[in-house]
Image (cartoon, rainbow, N blue to C red):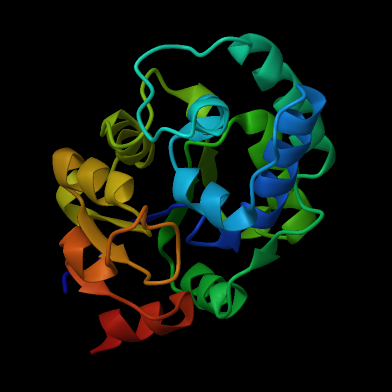
Length: 222
């Protein structure tokens, strides 16, 4: 594998298991609207395309709703308030994340985190979990005109560091991450434990599957 100058890492499903807090907020939102709550396992299938899409999926039960469902704006407001108050209450870092980030931080890589999550939620989550200290830049969903799988956020991040896409690596857990990386001209690695939306990690066609971020530094030493 070519040693990258820039490593961009996804947040939800790659660094942190945020599904418990997202599921809590989604269920409380549905309860507030007089609807039946949903379980965490179902919410895990809906994560990855930002809060707007998660709320639409919770309201409709559909992965790709054609239009905004009734009560969408109100539901989004309720969800956002609940989630903002619970952004790190139940979430936890995946094993090996801190060890891997510490090694990468010492390895003179440019490190960035790029997520579809809104900055209102991302920045408190990064601070409260201690992740923020390891990244030179954090790009959030509302920082860009398009969300992943569109490549814009990765292209702009590479430009920010003045690094060519061919010398950049994306690490993620979903088809959105792989598609964005491919379109941006990045290498792409995947972890097997995140939010796969019913797919197998082998189906994502990544350049490499790593069991843990702690394994990543060894890839570039061999």
